[in-house]
Length: 430
Ligand code: SF4
Image 1 (spheres, helix red, strand yellow):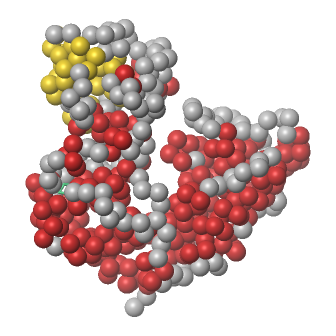
Image 2 (cartoon, protein in one colour):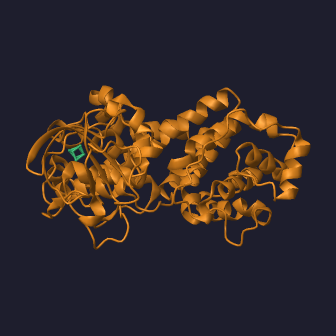
Image 3 (tube, rainbow, N blue to C red):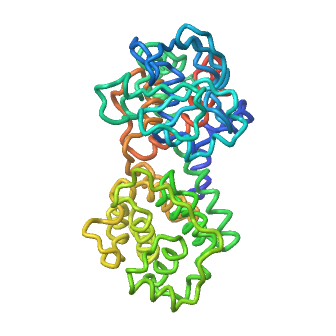
């Protein structure tokens, strides 16, 4: 039996649980799973305000009768909320952002879908949104939680249901703790198989390295700049960059993306001599609150360093890979003028799990034993939340990559899927 056949067999248990609700699973939106805005929405849905009175930015009292239906599609985050604002009953939609100005940045004022907004909820109180109608009241949660200096997603990852109400899966796994471990492993394999299938298709089409390059670029963009990074990889594919050195590739891509300043003469000249023209439509980068060490210019250099060393990295044992990725990413460190590493260990682990593992699995180069030793990522909110739901406690959170992948898969398929109801969830009743 080949490794891929073994993996498929190991993920069958989880696939079996997914089968009866597969239609509902099509809507799972992984892109929306991570990040502060999601944590804020979670807080609003569960109204975890610890009994603190709510007051709008202008001092008016607010009472939430119904937070509304969490909307995972386009439009306001919550539909049909029922609120009492200053003693007056209001029904309508609620939109949440970390900063008030995110409302302007997202261009919601021009979107008729936001026409029934009755409340704008943000973490910070200032600066105010410029394009928000003066008829829409604002609630700033930093005033409700004055003890938190900044928004802390992990603080709000302790939902009231995880602290108090038992989900049916919790009762189920209390009776069968070994079954929980089997589920996590099976769901982890399922997730890795899904990532691997992308590469299997690309191997058939003989463009696996291009698919790897696009995935790498998107990963280096993190959630905020994944799209412009992916666009860059598509518009400037490896076939176009092939004749150029890694440094020239960096010059071409950073100039084309609008990230290269003319003062960096050497790089600018490399781009100029390449003869490659900048795109007609400029790239848009989300640089809000970006620390200098996380600037896309540095991340692009890091991605190209990893690509430069790709053949060597593909030959390394998995356990050595994250450290080797950090080292490889520094290939252009001097050209960027950096004293610190261009890619940190945390990102290197994400790159290992999301790209190197599926790529090598597709090429049949890994063993099942190696997958059991996958390094774990930093524990994210979806991992913690799912574990709390399944076990009722934060104790024993899996530290290995395979089980963490399992938690993320269960989260996106079941716990975070608004079409799945706990009362009939196959995880607890399958
Ligand atoms: S959706 Fe399923 S796995 Fe998630 S909390 Fe509810 S019963 Fe548990």
